[in-house]
Image (cartoon, rainbow over all chains, first blue to last red; front, side):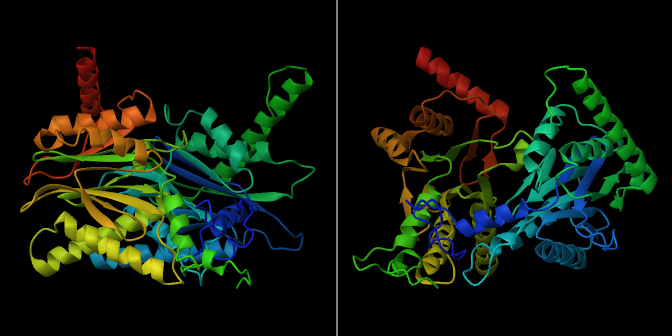
Length: 263
Length: 245
């Protein structure tokens, strides 16, 4: 049984003998090289955050965007291979625009997620194409049901709705942190979510090993009039300061020799 | 492209022994998902499958394998989830188009045949791979009554009195074969309970209402409905009472 590709991993249109499509699995691995992205569905909206590692000191920072507004009521965050992610986001913008043209109302986020998933999935079917190496999170507000929603589409082209989701390098530890918040039982507010996202990203960052980064955070809530917007700089600065305080407290506790603290 | 002499393993061409390896591998992928069971009764049908939410952070509502292709034709698609969703999209389109062209609601056998024909094309062309999913389509036909169609990735489609897909397909079919004489007289409740019992016996576990999904259509006038957790619990309780009695 070929569990290491070995010839069955050359195209999307080839199954391996145990029924796996290796190209899609490799594409999912490609996402894990990029900065962590986190999305949280809150009691009063949705918050998305993406960590952008600053690769070169000479780069003009804050140019490279990871979170886009594809429709006034929908925002999309992407991580992974950035050019691929941009293609997916552009397709999302087209879907949202043609939906308004055809149906006269703004696209419900669940439909947008399905459309994006269908598009991403198509690239896992043809031998002439390769899958996208990017995961995409869709935050939106449905004007019919009056509810906010959060979905994620990964490179194999399936969309699920989440209470909280993570993708990228720190996916596993971020998910563990999100599970600790017990979002499915007691959702938190958007303000709280911004702080938690900052905290989780800082917890995962290792000063000695990782490059310095920039955090891009956006939200969609009643306060923003259900429009997807970037979180204001002051709010983000406060959240980052709070996050760093939390970390120092935990470090101090550790130094005091308190056991049972996982870090 | 690979210069592997086993090129017949890589694309949909015949091996010297006359086998289509890619199609066989697709079956492996399609049968690696959940087990689904569909049963046909006197004037109703139902399909049952497991509900496994892979991640605690996922919303359980967004994880489903039961889909309405039209209000009167439902299906359970198991296998690779991404392929299943694409399959349902196409099936819904085809069913809708047929209804528009012909002026009356698409019968189950028409959707089944159309999706089977589409699946066959993927086994003959090199550029696209088969979709790794198995479909159990259910409906109550105006002319022929309740029906269950199993459509697979190779393009086979056959009507069944009762059918199963997934890793426990063989065991489930054995279970259902024992009941084949009684099935034509089953009421809707009996059909649902038979399917649930079958699934329970092959998976070797007792269920709670949140661990399975049940889709059913009552009569020619009925619509495809997915039962709520409470309704499933009611069925599970009466199954338990019957076995105790």
